[in-house]
Length: 117
Image (tube, rainbow, N blue to C red; front, side, top):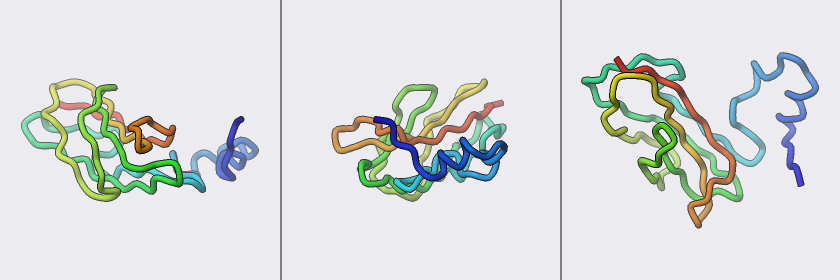
C-alpha cells in the first residue's frame, strides 16, 4: 500500500511546488537539520556539531545519525545537537533517520552534503 501525505499530493500536482514544501515534512513527522547546512564547507580542524529537530510521527521512536552511510550515533532527544566524529577532507553525507523501537528506519529522514577542507 502506498501512503501519500497531502504535501506529496500537492507536490505531485503542482509543478514547482516542491520548492516551497519542506524536504521531509509530512502529516506524520519531520526532520530538520539546522546545522550544518546542505552544501556547507567545513574546517577539518574544527569540531562539527549536528543541530537538529525531529517530530518522529506515530511510527517513530528515536533517531540514528549516519555519516557516509555508516551509523555513528543513536539520539534519544528529539531536539538538540550531536558532536560528529572527526571528518576527513572531502565530501560527506550526514543523515538523520527516524527509526522505530526495533531500530528499523521508517523512511522519514533528512540528509545534507558537506565538504571538509
